[in-house]
Image (cartoon, rainbow, N blue to C red; front, side):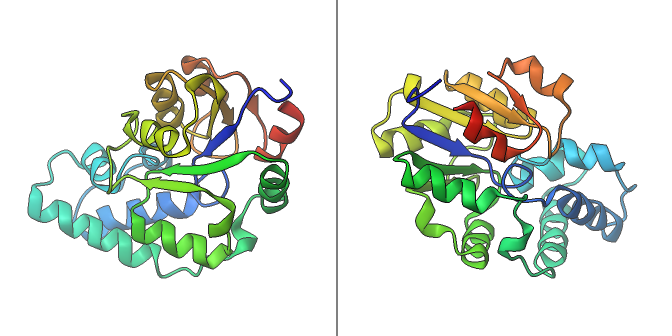
Length: 215
């Protein structure tokens, strides 16, 4: 696999940051506050990676526009009540990203977070300079639409066959498939290997840092 890729695109939550349980809690809390039946933990995890509006509609399909905005507001209040730091990265992730960048790879982020959420996360972890470009769900199409991957490849002038997507959810890997680029799954986030294998990743890694040995 040596030198096969020029651009590595990472999902954020559940791939680089150990945040899936917290996000699931915030989704459940929003539903509770708004009077809905609280979704099971795995139900909440299943929608992580989608834009927040898509995620809420998947969990609470009966919500009208007004209730949907209330759900999103409740989620945001709960989510931002917790201070993020570099310690929230999975073990070794920061050093891995630094090593990849110093080795000449272009690094990018494609996330279901909104721009405000990602900017706060990049600031809290002091990692903005590691990525040449980032794309968020509120400024392009939500996963699994491939638009954000196309935008990243266009920005970096990178061919599809030189691009790798790394993610923890079926939404990440389906997006990669839709963009006709290869992917690697990580098993530390939303979905199990059985689910991820549906989208034919090159590999499913237990932890993101195993990517260093893989490439």
